[in-house]
Length: 375
Ligand code: ACO
Image (cartoon, rainbow, N blue to C red; front, top):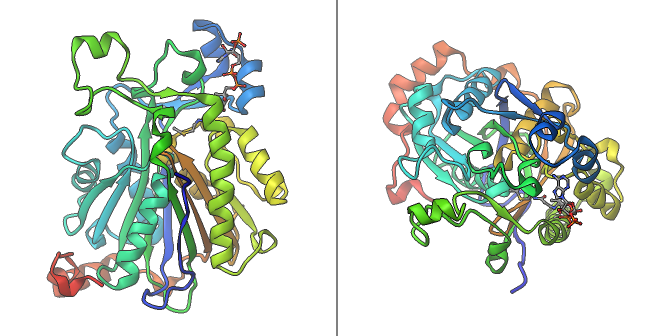
């Protein structure tokens, strides 16, 4: 089965345009360097840097769960958007490391930030999760079913990393990134999205233990099935091909070429993968925002953290065309093209306005599954 990207029309006639109006990110305090790893396992800074580009990664504290990282990123995104938590109609958390199987991590975030009006659920598409969640939320906001959505990519990969497997443990880190989306009349916002999945390759990157296939037992623990397993070389090949495919599909739908793209936010898995993509797309590395040297691969968190950093650092300028692309377990891949606009004061809702709207429209803004609310 060859994964065929599902392309979503650029400027779909049935959807309102949808923009990101605020971003936020959070990285745990503790930094684990390659030199630290070399002290406890048979590896070197030189091997890790040459093979991946990673120099260090952030590791969450034992008492920090994924929702703790996600909630902090959410608070920062709300501040940037000028919104209150009660103004959110929906929270989607993309993660492969939920706090627990249930309740959803999104529900934990809801409680932590006090987003009492939001409907909350998790989405699992591994490293492509943030882009899949962004597109899901865009459909709800674009259709008019809801007004405001919070999309989070958050992962505490250190919790499922096998620290005895040097081939994988050097690659990953923890973090969370968030984006708030709304319709902004007259602003293009998200221009096109392409997504693809290929379940035939799922075995190349997985965490086999703990689910209904291999419920937790003393044996599954002994067999180390509760850790991430990866066939690195095969994943590498898929990563390059699949990201190229979805990126080209999104560009085609938007009637654009790479020459139109000002900034690229690639999934931050490996510098060699990013360089291979850049060469094949014929776009210079100067357009690519890279933070994997400081963060490692944070799965669903990689793209939103990089996006937030790039926006705050001025790497992404007002009016820039941005291409985000990811690949991950499943296998999954996704690409999103958007036009970045700074939130304008007129688009912001002051705390006073939010509470006024909340009182008058509380029921209206609460998402319901009533068919009339759907498109
Ligand atoms: N330190 C030192 N040596 C190591 C290490 C390490 N940390 N890890 C592996 N090696 C050794 C291997 O044992 C092997 O030794 P040998 O030749 O004596 O057998 C040698 O290095 C080469 O190993 P390879 O696995 O062939 O190394 P490769 O060049 O393929 O690089 C890597 C490995 C970096 C994992 C690469 O395959 C890769 O980046 N793949 C893509 C992975 C990826 O992006 N995953 C994330 C995607 S999905 C998600 O984000 C969850």
